[in-house]
Image 1 (tube, rainbow, N blue to C red):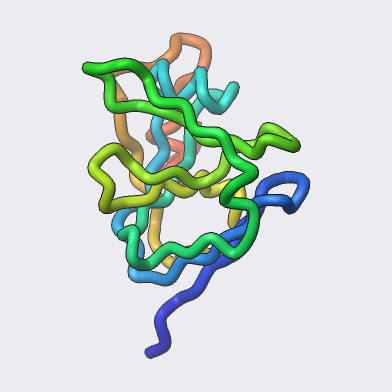
Image 2: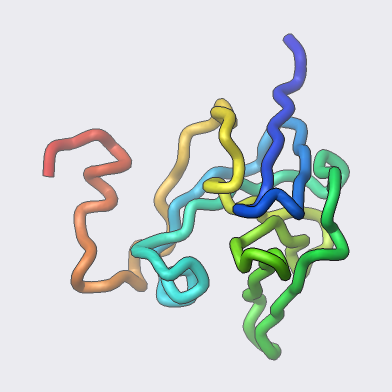
Amino acid sequence: MAEKILSGACLCGAVTYELTGPFDFFGFCQCSLCRKVTGGAFATNLFVALERFTWASGEDNRIDYKMPPPKKFGNAACKTCGSRVPRVLSSGDRVLIPAGSIMEDPGIAPTLVCTEDHTEWFTGLEKAVSGEPR
């Protein structure tokens, strides 16, 4: 079976990339940091090994934000349109891919993470992920 290749881009198309499976993890997170960085009820991220990721264009058109220690959290965005783009994790061996920036099916099911730090106004994600009626 051929390895799955996905491509992605920011909103304006200035930053583009490709990644090759297998992918490490695909997750929904609704912790307070992920809500702040996305502006939504949760973040949806795909993780891949660094050697399976390639910038196609615009690597120099991104900004990286890293929280001061001891936090290991950050964000990366396109300088032109401001949309989230991939970023190398602090470990240096994995890349976090904002799943909304890819169009193809990654072929891996998402998992819910960080259920203990969630908002009161958005509930039922566990049921939504599992397909149960609300």
